[in-house]
Length: 173
Image 1 (cartoon, rainbow, N blue to C red):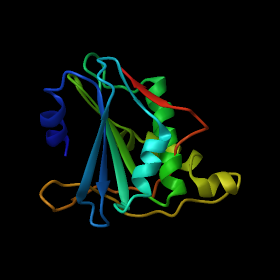
Image 2 (cartoon, rainbow, N blue to C red):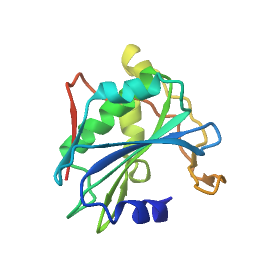
Image 3 (cartoon, rainbow, N blue to C red):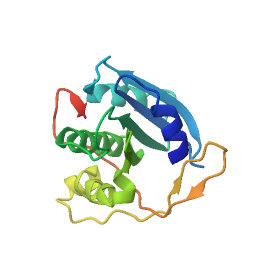
């Protein structure tokens, strides 16, 4: 999947945000791209993701991918806020928010691989919010998506959620 991301995002000249929908076998079934035509950020309103999740394409899981045209692949504060918001939205709709990747010319950052997705999932799961964080998230084996239709094993947990109320979400380089 990382090779696919490098090939797909390296030639881009504008920032984009893509949502990849996964079925229960971790195969990509749909992709939706958002762009604002800017080289500095992509602005996506949380209701855009909500509309996608309640469509007839009801996914099992979602992966978000966006690019930084220059510099580091490390997430900005806006990227962290956006990831929390996406997690909460997915959690409300009972959809697994698997990962948020950030591509840049110097590398690819994964919230899941860095371990940050687990904390975001715990803090921004609707179940945990409603129970004041006392409930444990059920642990599930998760597989990384594969473009060949075969899933690559990547141990993980069930993750859901996003963040506080926000009019819009900005992903910044």
